[in-house]
Length: 459
Image 1 (tube, rainbow, N blue to C red):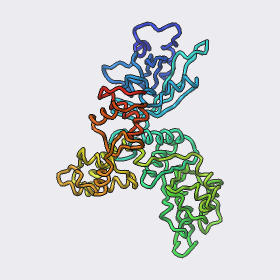
Image 2: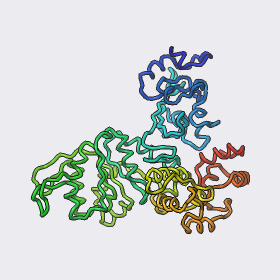
Image 3: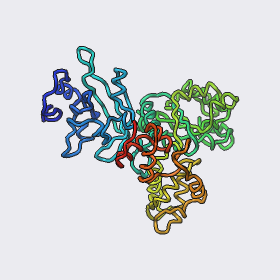
Image 4: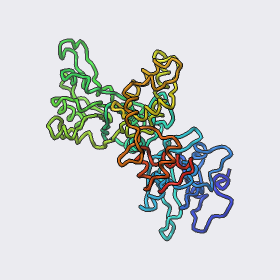
């Protein structure tokens, strides 16, 4: 197959266009999928890696616009409420990178997109090269394990994770209890160069102060009563891999100084030993506590805080990603069904029950959602979860929050029907982004639903 067979449209390119065949010859050596775009968003070329991963049999990509292929949009991404890397690259005249949710032959997937401009002799942008890497640590479809989500707040956290994973910077995961900090930490480990080495979890809230040092650093035989043999600590177990300090805000002040010494010097000593050991691990910490306030109150060492917070990542609460509730619920039901002792088969959720789940604020986040669904599965004799199988608090709050969606400051507590959405959108006077915020859904979701309904909306 020649370069022209693979990449070029039948019509000749303008004189200012890049040498597509030469570009493809270069891109063929790139293991990542890559395409060449002109400033009008048209795909001029695609390497074989792109064709293998994103190609659809009988459907040509060349000559189509990138947003049509990746998002099934009829307008550029920025006009549909998304970050458009071409627009950003054109403005900055440099590279831009973003995590997008792309349509692929396997369904929706998170894709890390990096786009770079190509300049002519007059320093004018004549094309762009876009490289794409599928994110393996998160799923945009229901999944029995790992991270799942599509909402913008979730994607921001995944994007930050992808950027920091190849480095050795310490990462601090910040979020409410139940937001999945250990899953995020494991995904970070899997995306790093240390993925083949151990991932070791230290539950800082579950170890007493008297045992913390021996658990973390290990001990020598005879170092205290009951120490009948040498024991390797969790730091040694994590050698070459990732050490995840969960709920680091619970580490006692007396231990914090020893933890700081470990991080700064990369060395430690087992309890009862004078021999210095060399540590080799990637540090990831997590907490739901306000560490900055704890530092100000003298409850957490400032020097330790600055060492562990080189790259903080905010993990969104469920109420910050309400569009993900159906996806999260479906994934949890898959996991419940996989554990045969919890439910004989995978349950489904009725539309009314799903509306109640979307209306709840979920103070306990994903952990609370899982507990609610596990209970509901046991009560749903026919395998369908209905409102009566959900806690009374969910039903009562939903009933009390049905108000006028056009009222100032209103945040939608339930999913609007198509008829309701069309009525609200038609009568709304403002930007689409304002309407999305008023309804409590993402601008991208609003754009898709309005497009399907044939209702115009201001950009």
